[in-house]
Image (cartoon, helix red, strand yellow):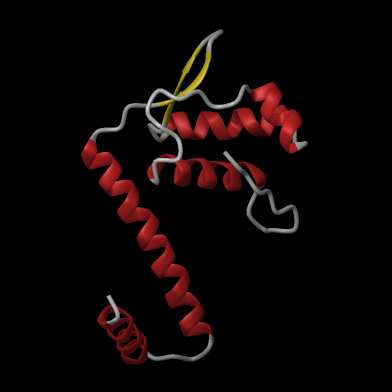
Length: 124
């Protein structure tokens, strides 16, 4: 698993971790039952605080993406199909939201945004 931390980003480091690990799980890069790196080893690898890793793991557990077994480690949780589908949809919605925000920033109207989406969809 390759995690890239952007220290100049306005997004907190733990949120960057959560987003990237969720993406790996959703896309199948991390399989059900697969162990995540230990907090200490991940902290050393990424050169960030162990507390930051722990906070990210706790958030992932709260959202149902991982489970932590005390003394054993943190593992990718079994996701039911509906939860996996919803997670993928949410990721797509976030990408669309960013694209629409960018389009609005450059002054495009809703109709122009729809036209662009239609053109893109025709290519698929």
